[in-house]
Length: 213
Image (tube, rainbow, N blue to C red; front, side, top):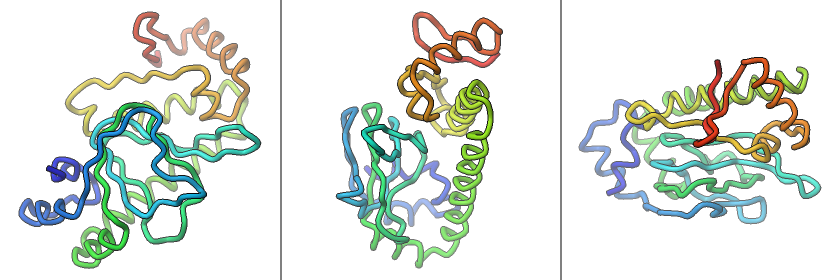
């Protein structure tokens, strides 16, 4: 039942169990494979999504190059909040279980539960702060940009409600890290090697998990 998607999600905090069950009836559950496109500039979002399990990337495409500006984990909420068309892509990067609610129904729920407005504002404020830190990192040397992005993703994973139950390792290919920082893949590979030699981070040879030392 969709209520399992809504539990442990910040914007639904302080909503009673009875009301949460009623709200869950408006949500649709989806089990999606890796690589599924949820929406794009040509086909904007018309729903609000909650990730129960899996991972989703939000990105722009410019001159055939993918620029990832946010990676989302279990418990994250995204999509159309009624502020205008989404002009970016959303794609699953792991097999994912999502719950989605049509935007007009989601906004009706928010109007009926004023406490959700505050929760939503706090969630958006956290996202804006995160984007500001990412933008500020662009002025740093390339090695620091890579380190900042790894720290940023680790912090997000640690806040994920799933990570509170299970250890969720951070795995990133050199290509993915290139897309998330906007740096050349060759540069990323070289600088990751430098960071390993310095002892700043380690990468598990078997699992690919990245750990900061």
